[in-house]
Image 1 (tube, one colour):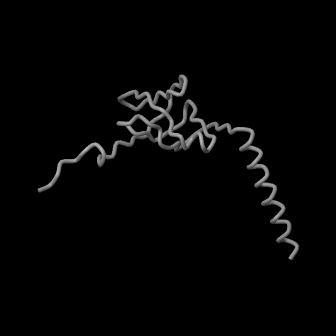
Image 2: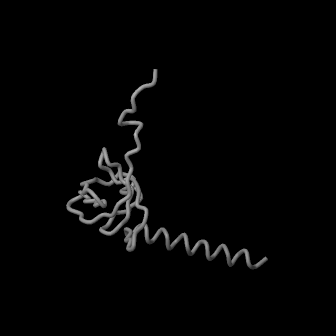
Image 3: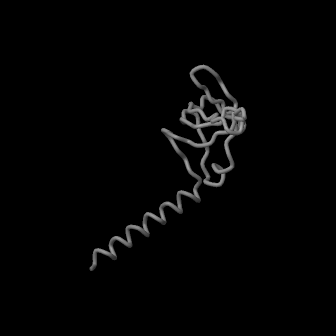
Length: 101
């Protein structure tokens, strides 16, 4: 006997654009509906903040933003900017070292 599909095994992911942010509550507007979502903790761990205009993938049932698919403008924390700059400089130094041989 075949079981009926449950909420857990039905894919409820959608892509849409963030249109408004008020105190950690992201309003995501689809062509037919508006959803108030929260961002997942992985964004905080990666020091990313979804911004207005970002195209995101979100879970329609649990109302969580799962992934940022496209963004026009991205700001990072100063710590992340410094880390990325250090990585870039290390990469340049390594390339110069390799060119010696």
